[in-house]
Length: 295
Image (cartoon, rainbow, N blue to C red; front, side, top):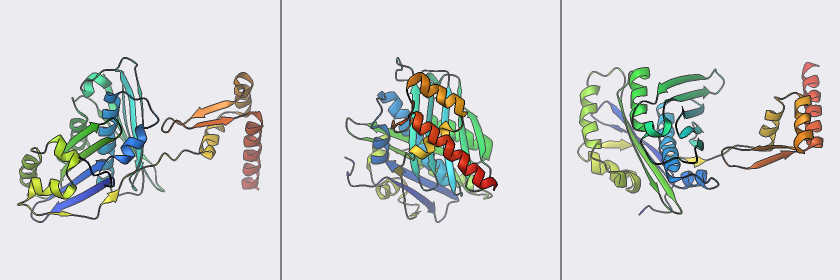
C-alpha cells in the first residue's frame, strides 16, 4: 500500500562508477487533485498520469528557470492532452477526448499525431521540439525524442494506478552523460537492471527501496528530492487579459448576445463571469494604463 503521508517527490541520482544519471518520481496527491473536478474515463486518467510523470522527469533533465508544456495532439479519440509545469515542479493537466473512447495503446488513442515540448526559459525566447507519436507507448515516444533530437540514449519507465479515491503515477529515467566514452557500456548494464522493475514496485516502494532493489551492488547516490505539486495558476486577472485580446466592440457584442462572458479554466474548471459593467471597466482601465505608459 502507498504511504498516505508520503509527499509527491522527484528524486535525482548518480552512480560512483557509471556515467549515467537517473531520476525517479512518484506522485499521488497532486495527480489526484488534477483529476478531481473532471469526469475523465480511466483511460484518459492513465494517459494524463503517464504524461504528468514524464513531464516531471523531462523538467528535471533541463537546467533552466521557467515553464514547460508537453502536449499530445492527434486525430484519434484522445485528441489532446497536456501537462504544464515549471522548474519548481508545479504542474497542471487537461485533456480533450471523444465520448466513445476505449482502452488501447497510445497509437490507438492518439491516431495520427505528434508530441510538442515547449520550453519557456525566464527572460529569453521560448523554443519547441516536435516528435511523432508513432510508438505504442508514451515512454517509447519520449525515448525516441531524446535519441533523435538530443542524441542522448535514454530509457523511460512509466506506471499508473487508478484507484477509486486516489490515483498514483510514477516514472523512472536513465540517461547517458554526454561526452563519456564508457557511458554506453554503463548504460547497457543499468538498463538491464532497471528493466526488471515491476509497475507495483515503481508505484509503491519508497525511492530508497527501489534503488536498493535494482542497484544494490552499484552504489547509487540520491540527491535531495524536489516536491511535485498541483498548481493551476488561473485567476480572474489572467482571464481578463484573455478578454482584452478581443476588441471592445466584440467583447460587448458577446455580452449583449449571452448576458455575460463566461470563461472556464480548462485545468481546474473554475468559472469566471464578466458582465457589461465588468467589460466596460476592463477596457477603460486598460486604456488608462496604456496612456500612463505612453506619457
